[in-house]
Amino acid sequence: MNLTPVVTRFTKKLHRSSLKALIGGTFALAAASNAFADKMLDCPLRDEPFTLNTPFLDILLSEDALAVFDQYYPGARDKMPPIFVKTETPAFGAIIAVGVAVSMGGDPGDIDAFAADLAKVQVTDADRKARCARYSNEMPEVELPDTDKTVLVFTKINGFDHGPSVTAATEAVQALAEQQGWGVVVTDQPGIFTTKMLKNFDAVVWNNNSGDVLTLSQRKAFEKYITNGGGFVGVHGAGGDSSYYWDFYANELLGAQFIGHPMEPQFQTAKLNVEAAKNGVVKDLAPGWSMKDEWYSFAESPRNSGADVVVTIDESSYDPGKSFGKDLHMGEDHPIVWSRCIKDGRAFYTAIGHRKEVYNLPEPLKILRDGIAWAMGEGEASCK
Image (tube, rainbow, N blue to C red; front, side):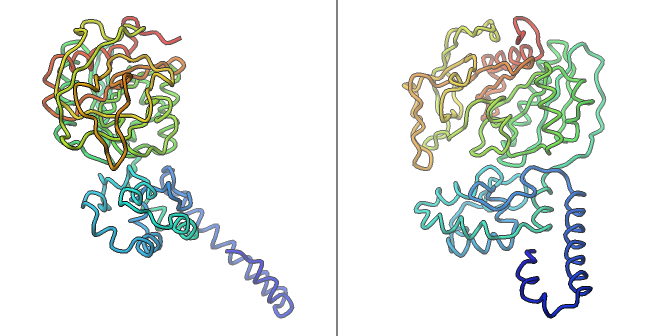
């Protein structure tokens, strides 16, 4: 509350003690509000103002912000697919900014005026509570295996749920771990992301995760884990969100921004080519093979941000097409699997894996096996 107009208008009429009580009461209310907010999780964007970059889900969850959206785009929500307007996670609105959602609908109208009015909406404690509801800090009950190497498979999803593919990928990692003598812990509880707990794992597999899933303190613990020598393996959907709200994850772990995948048809057979990766992360793949899956395109090649590309896709073997009017062609350099060093840590990402059947094919399994082994620090794996 801005007290200046109140003080200016009524100073001559109010008794000094009354003015003091008014100001003191206002500050007390503000302090109580801040104390309430502090009791909530330290979720990202909890206290951020409403902007065009706000997740569409947070607009849907705010009565006042939604009223502004409906004022500028009457009937727009009725025309959106149900997955766009879900308010319970997993929800597609968690991975698209409201500005992107508006553009997807065609003519965005006077989007600058919309942004200006949206910015006027006050973020309430109810908004903060709604924003943080999809995060968790509960520590899961886990039994740590007695093995030399242990993998954490993390399956928390707030955005798009790949369903059967998540299960298939988990089972694939478990089978590979049994073959390789690794231990495995599977959880969808982000409370495990503490400095103390992460020390128990040689690599963390993000299994088709979508939507922002870690609190600020959990992010800090994971960043520390990676930069101090830990390993990250991202599988398919873990790199397929339209909007990211964590710079370290988007820019360091992935190093490439997803822009879409073919829709007509969604699944196509394409030819993949293996590169001679400098770190030797994949050892026994054939020079090339063909398979059917959903093929991601990115704003630019991760090679440009220092990635060591492992597998590329031949765009002449399938039709990238367009997604919401955006051309998905990347040209001759279209990486689909890559790795990168982050200080002493290692990050490996494979965009292969939308179809559950993929996790029964020899090539994707070899990529997953060798990617995890490299992230753990096995073989020619050191990042210095």
